[in-house]
Every structure is written in C-alpha cells, then in structure tokens.
Length: 426
Image 1 (cartoon, helix red, strand yellow):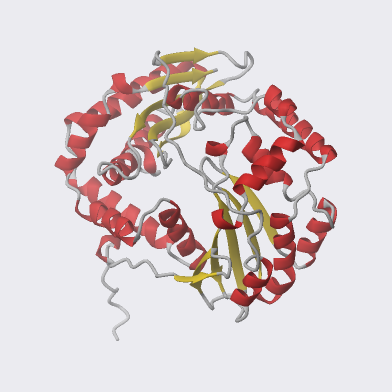
Image 2 (cartoon, rainbow, N blue to C red):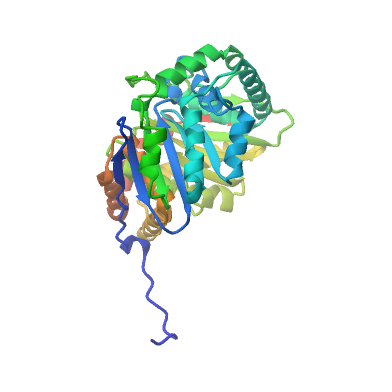
C-alpha cells in the first residue's frame, strides 16, 4: 500500500443505506415488543408507548400532568423512594408527552435490568395521584410559565401554533395558569385508566439485552390484562387557522431582540410532496449552509441563526421559519425571507448546491443509524405512524434522485409569500 496516495473520496449519496431489521415478540397478554439488539455496550433502552398524548385529552394539560405524576408515587412507594431506587443503579427513567403519544423510557446497564423492571412496572401499573403532589406540580408549572411568558421566543412559539391550527386544536393548544388550577386528581385517574392499558401499550427495546428479557417482561408487564381493555378512536379534528396573516405583539418593552416566525400549513408525511419538501426545506433553512443562513446571518448580520423546520405531526404538518433578530431589523428579516422563497420559485437550484444538500442529508441519516438506540427510534416512528421500511427507502430515493425542476415545482406550489403567517414578538 502506497500511503502517499490518499484514498478516493466517496460521496454520502453513493452509500447503500440499510435499516437494520427489528425482531418482534409478543407478551402473554398481547403487548408487542420490538427489539433491536446490539452487543457494543452493556446498556439498554426500554420505552413504553401509549396513545395518551394531548390529542386525547378533554381538558387542557390533562395528558401532560397524568404522565408526569405517574412517577410521583405508588401505593407502596413515594416519589423519593422511586427515584432513589432508580438512581442507586445509575439508571434514568424519563417520561414525555407528545401530541399523539406519551412515553416512559428506561436507560440502564444490562446487568441491572432485572432490578429496575419491577420499579418501572410499579410506576406504570400502580400510580397514585396524590393531592399534595398535584398541588406542587401545578405550582411549579405556573412559576415556569410566568418566567417563560417574559421570553419573546417562547411567546412566539405559542402564538404561531395557534395561528396555524387554531387555539382549541391539540396542535395549537397552550398551557395557562387557569388550566393548571383546574386540574383534579379524579380527572388524572380517569385519563390514566383509559389510556395506560395493556392493550394500548407498545414496547421498544434496544441495546445489549439480557437473555431472560422476555420472561422478565412477561412477569412484570405481560402476565395480566392490567387496567382492562380500552379501545380508543382517533378522530380527525378540524383545523381552524387564523383569518388574519400578519401579527405584531409587544411583550417586553426592555428587550433588544424580537422573535420572528414565518409559517404555513403543509400536508402530512403521507402526502407525496412531503419527502420532496424535506429536501427543499433543507436548502431553504434546514442546515448551517442554507439559503436563509447565508443571506440573513452571514451576509446581512441580522441574526445569530435562522432555521426552517418541517413539522412531523400526524394529521397535518407545517413549514415554520424561525429566528430572533434585532428589533430594528425584524421587518427587514421578513422581507429577506420572502426574497429567498421567491428565488426558489423563480430560479432552479444549481446542481452543485443540490449535490451538497444530498450529501448532507444522506450523511445525517447515516449518523442517525449509528447504534441500536437510534435505529429503534426510526422503527418506532414508522410503526407508530402505520408505515414500514418502504417509506424510509422511498425517502432515501427521493433525496438521491430529485431534480432541480421538481424542487422548483414544489416551491411554486408552497412558497408563495401570501400563504404564510407572519409573527413578530418584541
């Protein structure tokens, strides 16, 4: 081997990406378990997913409060005892609530799984919603909300979602002081019993797994029909966007920056234009070398950073361009955003730029597939949205083959400035 000759450079688009398959098991009570094994490290991640997101609540913040307070005590142990049991083994038990789903995720060393699974099982199967814990939770959340409402960026995020989807839609609903005050333990118990049931549970596991994992899961989560059966119907709720398009809100008279949002609704991930927009959005503002960043940050100096995001919601998505800029240049920032949108409508993307973005996106996906934890997240998103690996491979194919003409056609259809909501919070 002649080490004075460098190896050939291979573009990311030349790689043949493969999504490592999962194994599927079924517990005795019917709970599906999706598994991606890896022997690289002596760790594992176990995630329980329930259809218990904000979509299903009939009272504001009920889903979030229920998910959070399940970990604050059972009939046998207090919140302190639960947390000490987990921390003793150097593990971490996290919970999250999203629009459609709610999760409980355990990260631990493989050798401690047998000691920690009973703790997780107790949290899921036997939570007690105590009045004092709810009171502390509501008070803490109200204090956080009071602080956050002074931040223009936080206020802008709340309002833009309301304009896009409607203030009563789950995607546009926001937390309020009155909402926290209205929470009652009886409502939390009812939401828990309806949504955290054995037949609504899916389990995703990744990492270095103990040989007796399935028997342990059967013992603590699969041996009974806990909480009974609950058959939920997911309805498509009406989207009610704001009638006006331009909004200016004064929030902090002493602030020196304003939060800018330029956004519009967009079809969901099942629409054929969605993977095309993933590419176009990356060109517009999806990475550090994007059009928006090059113009508004590098050339104009209006902001430290500006990004364009494509929401990934189930019913409908949205394109959201967001930044913080000096108060005196917020309006100029919006003008430049519209210029970039119209440029993509009127001028085809140069091949060199398109090749760069292709390599960036494929390289990012390669990084996202580095390890069992990342791979199981890919599978989780597909499974929970009733998709299979063909969706993943079709998106890869779109990134590799989409043409400048196709991108320009998508831009002409969705990048008309008049279709966007404008919001500035200063």
